Amino acid sequence: MAEGTVSETGLWWPFVVMIAGAAATYVWRALGVALSGRIDPEGPVFDWIACIAYALLAGLIARMILQPSGLLAEVALGQRVVAAAIAVAAFWLLRRSVMLGVAAGATALVGLVLLSGGLR
Amino acid sequence: MAKPTTKPHAGEDFGTGRRAALVGARRALGTPSIVLGASFIGFGALVQQVGLNLWHALFSTATGWALPGQVALVELYALGTPLLAIALAVGLTNARLLPMAITLLPIVRAPGIPRIFYYLAAHLIAVTGWIAAMRDCPRLPVPQRLPYFVGFAGALWGVTLVATALGYALAGAVPREVTLGLVFINPIYFMLLLLADLRGRSRILAAVFGAFLGPLSYLVVPDWSLLLTGVTAGTLGFAIGRVRRERMRSRHG
Image (tube, rainbow over all chains, first blue to last red; front, side):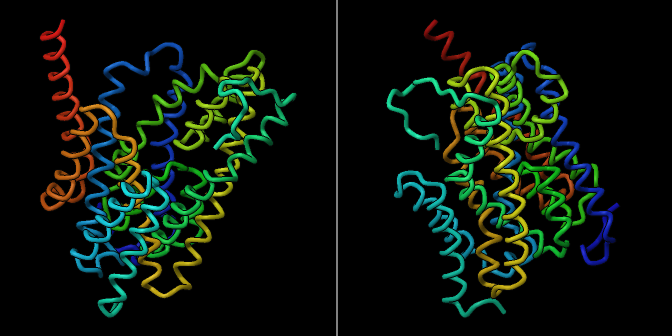
């Protein structure tokens, strides 16, 4: 049931997707309330769940940097990778500050693109 | 950040639940709001840039309110991924909320609060508010803990709605190069959070495997790539971490 590009889809379908996403999110919160006190959050099952969430998130990040859609896809791969590397370097050099690392990475990408003549 | 107290583990008492909620809200409006606000500005820009409208952006932040899942949803939606694959990927991305809720509840639970309140407050559970509550609530009188958490996380929720709208508006108004920077905020933010948070061999392995498998599997099975990545790389990292731990134990035990 691939829906094609966003512009072809209706106004309401995105809301349906978001309600499904919100339900898939809230179910964990509610389940946590229901199960608290009856299950050990340090046990192996939760370690496994955390591993899956970390792996999925790492996969998403790698895809957004290496195989982005939309606007980011108009930037050369090398520029995206260099900007990401600058963010990591700034994070380590500036006392592991996530905020400064993000600022450095985003600024670096804009700077690299402007230096190479801007977006088409 | 909490105000530094003279004694590191000194108890706090704000008198009433209402005042505890106000203090929580005021603390949330400091550093936590700046960091989270920036990333939701990035989210708003992302939504604008894939062609959805402002109400979609606000609806996602209001109902989902867990940024990694929201970003995954918009990315997958823009690629035309089937609904089931999107819902499952969002669910797995946000599965970390389960242990968070389980550990928070015993701390904020107080006699006389109806059960439904916990289920309502649970919607506000997300990383930033959870960390603050786990740190601050144990030092409060029991009846003030849930109000403090709701004040803190509720204020953050409001800030992120404003930030989402701001990011959406900015993305349509500033030069495309600047929008590019805004859209780049979230992958970078998550990447650094992951670097800052990673503890334990299994989680590090899971993340490394995931970073490789994500782009590779996308070339083969684009719609189901994230799910496949999460389950495969996550289970592999978990299993290797377990085996190594067992081995260490048998060697030293």
